[in-house]
Amino acid sequence: MVNELRNFLALSYDELEEMNLQAKEQRRNRVAMHKVQEDRLKYLTDEKRIKAVTVLFSDLEGRLHMLDYDKKFLIKSWDNLTFDGSSIRGFTAQRESDLRLGLDWSSFYWAPADVFGSGKVLVFGEVIDKGGTPYSADIRGNLKMFAEQMYKKEGYTLNAANEIEGFLFQGSDAERRYHETGKFEYVNTGGYYHSLPGDLLRTFIDTTAEVQRAMGFQNEKDHPEVAPSQFEINYSYGEVVAAADQIQLYKLICRQVATRMGLTACFLPKPVVGVNGNGMHTNVSISKGGKNLFWDPKGEEKLSQLGWSFVDRILTHGNDICLMLNASVNAYRRLDPHFEAPNQIKASAVDRGSMVRIPIGNEKSMRVEVRSVAPDANPYMVMLGVFKTGIAGTTSRIKNLRQAERYLPDNIYTALENFRKAEWTTKLLGEDVKARYADLKQASADRCPRLLGTFVKAPEVQYHHDVYNQFLWNMF
Image 1 (cartoon, rainbow, N blue to C red):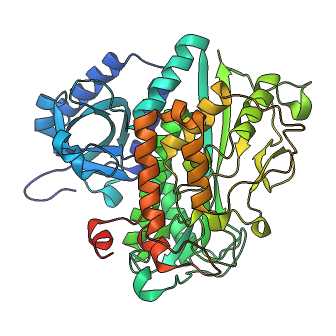
Image 2 (tube, rainbow, N blue to C red):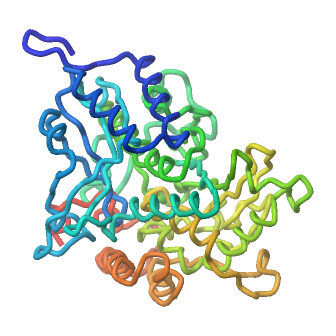
C-alpha cells in the first residue's frame, strides 16, 4: 500500500506464489537451518517495505495465537522473544509464566496484503521454556522432534495431506453469537459439487483458493460439499510439520476471507443436526529416498506390509487416541453412522464408515486415510498421534483386527476415560501434558449437557475451544 507517509510491502499474487514456492522447496530439500535463518534475516534487513513480522504458535488445544513484532526489533532480538505463558490455556502456571518463542525460519510465508494487511510476513514459532529446551506442551515442537528423529534414525520422511471440510454461515461471529440465536443460517442450499458462479459460497471458495495458491499451497480441487453451505478446498501433501502448519493457515485464511464478506467460516464437527458434519480426513504415507514405502504392487490393496502394520497399530489404539482426533463435545455428534461417519474401528478399501480407509493409489500416491479426525482437533496432536502410533504403537491380538466389531465412543466422557486410562497416551504425550490436556477437555465437557440429545446445545458451541474467549468463559 502506497501512501504519502510510507510505502509498505504489497506483492502481486503471482509474486507471492513464486516466493512461497521457493521457500517450500528449501524446506522440502532440508536446507540447513542456519542457512535459511541467514537468508531470512538478510531479506528482512534489506526489504525496507516490511514493518512487522507475525509470529504464529498454537496452544495445547490447537488454538492459533499470533504476535506482531516490529521488524527492526525482531532483527535485533529474534533469539530472545519472551511472552507470558500463563495466559495461554494449557501452558504454564502464573508462577512460572515466562516462555520464549524461537523462530522456525523454514516456516516462513508471504501473505496477500489485501487479506492480511500490507507490510507483514508470517513465520511459525517454537515455544521454549526458561531453561532453553523445547516446551513440553508445545505439540508442534514435539511433532517436529519426532519427525526429525525418524529421518535421522530411519531415513523416513513423514507425509500428510488433509481434506478439511467447513461450513459458511450468514453473519460474522455466528459461533460466538450462537448462545443468543440458537441456530446457524446457511448462505447456500445447493449440494455436492453444486454452486452457481458468483453466489456467496462460490465467491468464498474462489477467494480462499486464490489466497492459498498465493501462499504456496499448490491447490488440487475445491468444491461445495454434501451438506448445504459446506465446502472443501484441497491442496497437495507436504512433510508432516508443514502439513500441520497448513491446516492452521487454511482455517485462518477461511475465517479471514469469510469475515471480510460479513460471514462465518465454521469448523465445528457437527454444527447442524440432520446433515453431514465436517471431517478432516488425514491422508498419510512414509517415504525414504524419494520412494513411497506404503506402495507394494503385490500387496493387499497394493498397500505394503509396512503400511498394513501402520494401520493395525492405529486400529489397536483407536479408542486410546480418539480424544486427540476428536477433541470437542460437538465432535461426537459427527461420529454417527447415518451420515457416512467413520465410527467403526475397522480398515477398508470401500467402507466409508471405517476409521481407516485404503484409497486407490499408485507408486506416488499410495496412502492410508484416517477418516475419524475432526477439523477442530489440534493438527499437531493429530499428526503426532497418527504417525507415532502407526510407527511405534503396539499391535493387538484381537482376532480379525481389521474387521472386528469395535466402535469409537459416541460421547466425550467415554473418550476421556479411554484417554486417561491408556498407557499409550502417556508414552505419546508424557504424563504432565497428558493430564493437562485431559483436564482442559474435562472442563469444557462439564460446561455442556452430559447427553448430546437431538439438537446442538448453546454450551457445546459457546465453550468450544475454537470459539473460546475469556469473556464468554467468565459468563459461566
